Amino acid sequence: MNYQCIQYFWLSVTGLMLVATGCGNGSVDGRPTPVSVSGTVYYKKQPSVGAKVMFAPQGHQYAAVGQTDSVGRFHLQTFEPMDGAVPGEFKIAVTKFEVIDLPNGGIKENFFLPGKYRDPSTSGLTAVVPAEGTKDIRLELAD
Image (cartoon, rainbow, N blue to C red; front, side, top):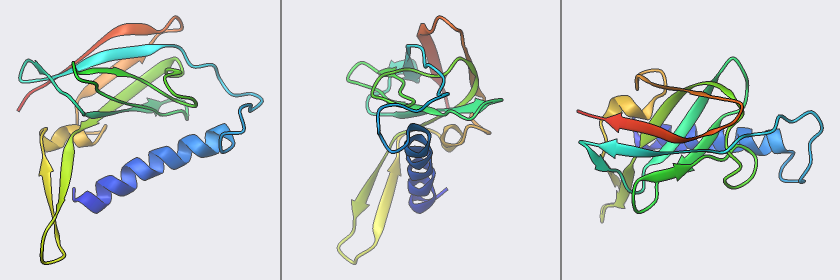
């Protein structure tokens, strides 16, 4: 998957979140209430700092996203910052990359996690968010 595909993927997720929230108008009738969801991403048994996490919904339409902090912790957001995720089943994608502009006008992509984790259908990562939320999701990534 190249940088442009990844960029479109994450922009699509963001766009879906804006549509679901009515472009940030603060209130949408019939919108489900997210519950607090947080966890930690580990790669090779070490916390992964700056990784983007996406929970792709299975059986409902509300994705949730987050980014790991300086100790690898993430807090999900569906509609508002850190509001959590809608209870249900999810497949999970995790990515961490940088894009370097080259002098010749091209770009170079540096990925810091294995490629299979960039796509929720190939990552093998899943979670069930219970109605009361959860603070202990542990995502273990390996080569």
